[in-house]
Length: 292
Image (spheres, helix red, strand yellow):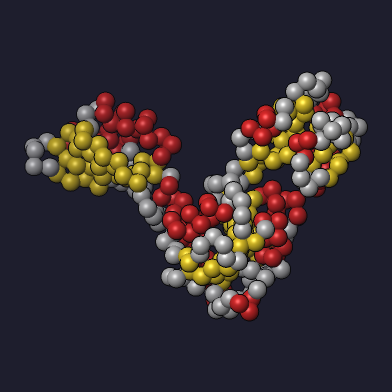
């Protein structure tokens, strides 16, 4: 693989085909990276950063990062935990959310984890599931399956399954109900534990810096408003901004224009308070990058 890529560039491995692929490409684009790919290639180049992207199976990514074949990877925490790869989790990426759950047939008498004592459990994640039940001190027999795990109770292979789900729709279609969540996952950016090449490490740090700026921007909205000057102290208390708001006098006597940032998760709550004290003409805009 390396001989087809530029050895002066750092390499990032992402899932070739799957639910993380589009999100990973979107992350690169939001970070201002222009990637030449049509989605069918095994690797691609970035036009405006010394970065090569390789598209491979997600279960191969942690080992390739650990052994230094690639410099970085985007993969689910569940894959890392199952493989037990010795990698450095650099950044949680806030996409690819899912859970590893224990589920049984809807008509099953099993209602709690303790009811699975000495029962068969089918899963594609034997390591994570084994560790969980050992921690709970519940003896079970793990049956490893690489596909169609949800069919195993109906085929009398197992009394329960441990499977990955994001919405639960597949489990519901298979007439299964969840009795416990044992592992929560999302996509993470990983690299080697130790990098001895300072130049490559600087490029890795630079890329992480861009990703963090993109993530920070998604947490905030930039707002502009007009407000009575006498209410300025109250406004600053409600929306202090990253350090302090920008305040500009308006032509109308006793009025000011205020520009600041509001966290996305409290946006509507803060806007309601601003309206109640007289703010008007409130404009909210997305932030593309935020460097703190």
